[in-house]
Amino acid sequence: MLVTSIEQINRLQYTVTLDHEIQLVLYKGDLTRFGIEEGNSITTEKYHIIVEKVILKRAKAKLLQLIKISDKSENELRLKLRQKNYSIDVIDRAIEYAKGYGYIDDRRFVTHIINARISRKSKREIVAYLRGKGVSAELIEEGFQDTKTDEVEVVRKLLHKKLSTNETISNEKSCKLYGYLLRKGFSAATVMKCLHEVGLKYNETEDLDIFI
Image (cartoon, rainbow, N blue to C red; front, side, top):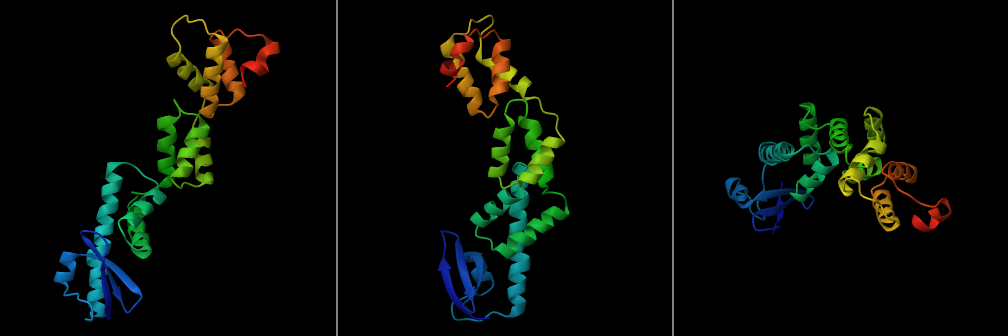
């Protein structure tokens, strides 16, 4: 296999191209260790050693390091490894390795996120967060089906934090609270119900003006 080019990516890494198509990302020490120079050839055996014993091993170690820091979705981990210049094939193999030991499980990730946030976030906020992490809509919905949710109670807690004891709520403050809770993804019906519970006084004929 002919080393057709060696290009520096950053201070530490180099892209080594073999036979004009196969690319490896290696460190300067790797080039020295394996005697890789532009115009030289490497054997198929050496190529497999580099991929299996060096690149894949590093990808697995990086993956485990990321998981150790905090639970992450599969898609999030893939993106992190791509940022480190690992090839799609190496990433796939590292991911499968971690899955085999149960280190990556999007269902568990969804359950963890829902349970951690359900007492202070709306379902819409949690769904948006999980979709942003690349989790499928189906898995997210399954997670909510397996979790008891009570958005009325969440809104009550948020209002309790926002209001002083025995505070009289003005129409202006009601509007601000209403908008704040709607932006967090709670339904208008749930927000109105909870505002009424804490003593909101309003004229029914003024509803549309107050809560635009």
